[in-house]
Image (cartoon, rainbow, N blue to C red; front, side, top):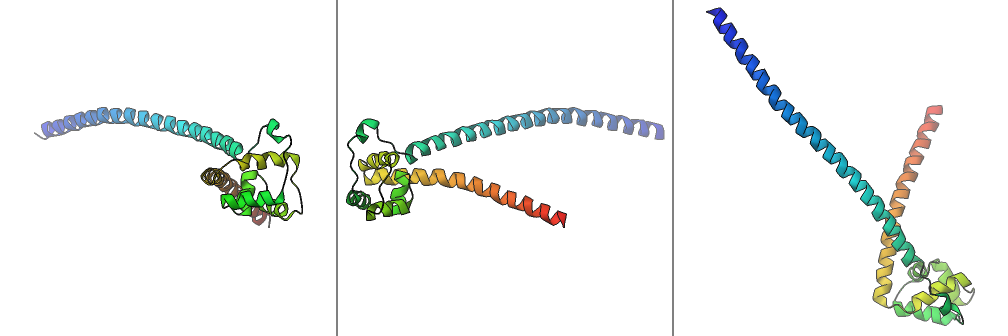
Length: 174
């Protein structure tokens, strides 16, 4: 009798192993397929993020460097009072207005005080901002801030990582 019980036990365990093996092979195949799909999605996301980043930079460049056509620049006059009046009309600070014109806030301040004058290349930005309203100005500023913040975060991360590496190397040399 013990031989029959042992044989029966062996047969049951063999069939169970066979059944488990079949089920595991199905799971392994589906798991491998899922991993391939996930890897493909990651590649697609990376490609789309690169494309989005490129388009954001292009849009920021388009909005950040407003240029009037060369025809409209002939005969353009500069007035310190008009710069101040335009800035006040839009309700912007010198820093914000400078961002729209693609110069610093200090430059805008100097122009308004009459202590300096814009270069020919900067006149295009001034002319382009003349015709916009408050809503468009705030929309452009938001787009510029969004484009800047995305780029500066990435740059900041790289700088921090670089500092950490440098510090680690210096500690290792000691």
